[in-house]
Amino acid sequence: AAALTVALAGNPNCGKTTLFNNLTGARQKVGNYPGVTVEKREGFCHCRIGEPLRVIDLPGTYSLTAYSEDERVARRYIVRENPDVVANVVDASNLERNLYLTVQLLELERPSVLVLNMTDVADSRGIRVNDKILTDRLGVSVERTVGSRNLGTDELAAALACSVCRPAQPFTLDYGPEVENAIAVLQGRLSANKLEYPARWTAIKLLENDAEIVELVSTLPDGQSMLALAGNLRADLEQATGIDPEMLIANQRYGFVQTLILSAMAADDSDMKTTS
Ligand code: GDP
Ligand code: K
Ligand code: MG
Image (cartoon, rainbow, N blue to C red; front, top):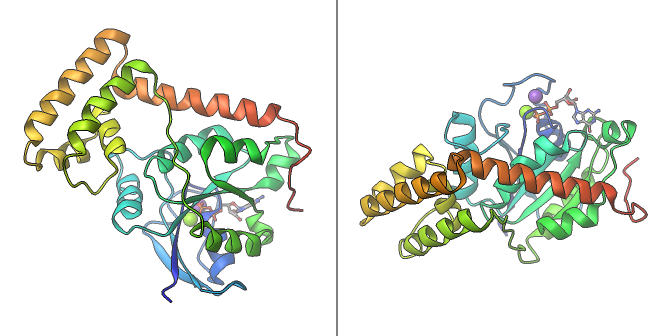
């Protein structure tokens, strides 16, 4: 059987390359500075469970906008190359910034596993979250690792191999009534077309006025009228809320993440797993 493809995605410096090395036995350069992973790398994980995993180390990003090449590379890879599973690596000591990317990755609708790395740092700072809350609210399984000590690697490999056995749980962030209405209108028009990106994600990106997605939609048979519609919806949203739609959407994402973290930290931690 063909190897399952796993894409490692996450913020810069959350430990993606360290986990890549742990999984594949490679010796790629890691470091606490940006720009180490300039392009995606690939290797194989011959883990204890069945099939080997083909592991891709994507460039680190804080968001999935069209503003930087790293972000475009990451989102294009996840959609066009269709990896079997996205391993979203998260710095567990810096949840707010990291989960802001997580919700955007989940909107790409690929099967995903949430990897809480740097759990040693989180533990030492007293940052404790309940994995079950994260799993319930995000629809993904959670694995804990300490990459720099090669802890949790086998469990991670097993979870990645297993992730494709069960169907992906759909994740939908509720952007509030005004934005959701606009998304629904655009999604309805978009779903008549064959798109490479998920229709809901594409609708959100049109409301954010994402340059690459605007370009893509302009090539559709009724693309020009859809872009005009998106322009009107953006103007209506700005009129109704007084906020630029791109900012409005970013604010909703931050709000969701903040609420999620508060719930996950407040929850009884008696069922917490530890790695060390
Ligand atoms: P990337 O930018 O996501 O690829 O991150 P790297 O793999 O280059 O790691 C960034 C830095 O964090 C390196 O110095 C690693 O040794 C360190 N690191 C990776 N994982 C952990 C971990 O779980 N705990 C701690 N304390 N450090 C880690
Ligand atoms: K790095
Ligand atoms: Mg790296």
